[in-house]
Image (tube, rainbow, N blue to C red):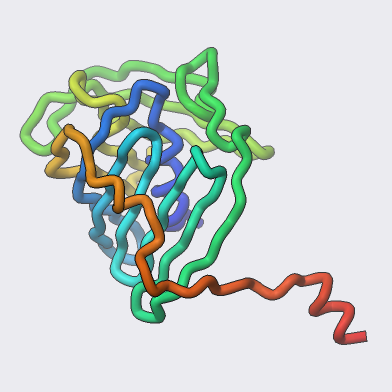
Length: 187
């Protein structure tokens, strides 16, 4: 089953090495309904704001932070540079095939529509992507069967405030319990 998180991962991993700096509204639709949020990108750092959580991806620090604003807490996950390697053959991480299907209208603009195959960790996903010639990542991504979609709207290319990619003052780190320690305590 597809999740909103999967859409975000595909959207962010679709960014190529020449990604632009921008904020955009993000609208995802799926079997669980429609969700709206905001995405900011600056120099490879990404911030995704949703109703209950904010995710900040910092490849330069090899970390992802998940902020929980209501609790003023955050969780931290280490990432490796391998998570952000760009495929030499297709130009995007995990992409193995791209076919131009023609043009289509998205947000009142004519876009190139592609069928794109992503592969990794033993699974393959085929999606539609709509590309704007003036933007370095898909403006819209959707399942071939129409079960979900993610679209960037109100894109404003330009530099962002650097504070968007930092943990806000006053937030406390929430440490997930180590599973090995938990299991040892149950013996």
